[in-house]
Image (cartoon, rainbow, N blue to C red; front, top):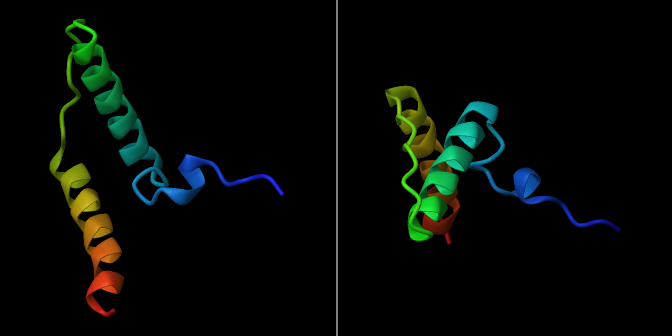
Length: 65
């Protein structure tokens, strides 16, 4: 049975708009480590809200344990 991809299992990567932003952020960050200056994408208020909502949903089950 094939394993699920990171895109399928990571709640932050399930939303296409948020996934695109995060991948661009990861690439810019990795490039900086290698000494390449890349432009970081803008983090819109809409994306900030999505991130907070996902984080809150991930935290909720932990609090109930």
